Length: 432
Ligand code: JFZ
Image (cartoon, rainbow, N blue to C red):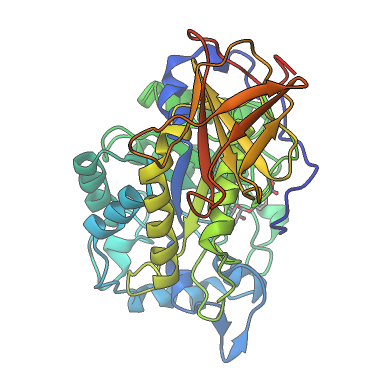
C-alpha cells in the first residue's frame, strides 16, 4: 500500500452508460464518504497469542491461519458497550462526509447485523445482542447521511464454500455457486430489505467470480432496490463506478466515475499498535487531489472492540470538516477543473466558476496560471473571505495573474474562486 500518488489508471469502461444515469447524482455530488471496518478482528487488534501479526488488522484470521473454531470464540467476548450510532453518524456529518459504508460482513464471515441465514452474527452470537446496522440506519436517516453496506461476497473464511480459507477447508470441495445462491444472495436480500434505502453496496475482491455470477448478484440488487449503486468490485466490470487501488490516487484526471478507498493510518480494521496517522493537511490534500481528478474519497475509520472510533481519527475528521465548512462549495457538486498537472495547485469547477485550491502559497501572493485564458474573467475572491473582497487580476502574456495577500489566507489549503462570464463550464483540457 502506497500513499503516494501513482501513475495508475482506474479501470476504464466499467459502465459506459452510467454517466447519464440520475441515480448516480447523489454519489457524484457527495465526493467524501466514511468507510468503517468493524468486526471481531477489533478484539485481537493485530495480536494473536502474544504475537504481533503483520499486515492489515481485519486480515488477522487469514494471516495467522486461525482455525474457524478458535476465531468463532471471539464472538462471545464482543460487547461494544460504547457503540453509539448517533456519535458515529454525527462525526461523519461534522467531517463533511455524505455517505457511510460499513462492513456488514467482511472476509472473516462474521455478520455485523441480525441475519436469519446464520447464527454467526452480532445479535445471535455476542453478549451485545444489538443490531448496530439498525441503529445506524435510524441515525443516518435522521442526520441525512446515505447508509451503505460493505459486503464480502467472495471471500468468506468461516463458510466452507466461501473463498479463501485453505487451512480449515479443502478448496477442492468448495461449492462457490451454492455459497452464492444459498448464502450470499439471501443475505444481500436481508441487507436490502431490513434497513431502508441503501445508497450502495460495496462488494469487494471478486477474485474468480464468473460473469454470470456477477450479473446475477447485480440483478438481485436492482430487483430489490433499483437505485442502490454497486461498487466496481462486484467484478467483471459491472459496477456503477470504478475503484482505484486501496490508497491509490491516479496521476491524472479520469473521466469515468471512480473512488479511492483509503486509510487514515495503515490499517482498515482496528490495530492497537498502528499509530502511523496521516496529518490533516495530508488528508485534505488527498481529498482535493482526488476531487480535482474527478473522483470520490472514501476515508476509513477502524472502531475498537468497545465501539469507539480512535481519537486520532476523530480529531483529523473534525479538522477536515472545519476546512470544508469554509471551502465546501469548492468540493461538493463540482467536477474536475481545467487547471491540471501543477504541483502547487489543484482545480475544481462548476458552471460559471473555477476553484483554485492552492497548496503552496507564493511568497509575493501572486498566483499565475497558464491554463485559464478565458476572455474576460468576471472576478476573483478568496472562498474563506466572507466579504468576498475582489482580488485584482489580469491577463499577462496569456497567463492569468491573480493578486492575493502575501500571507497565506487559509490553511492548509487556500481556495481562490475565479468567476467566469455567464455559465461557462471549464473542464480538463477544454481551454488549455
Ligand atoms: C480489500 C480487503 O481485502 C481489505 O481487507 C479491505 O476491506 C479493503 C478496502 O479491500 O483489499 C483490497 C482490495 C483491492 C485492492 C487492494 C486491497 N486493489 O485493487 O488494489
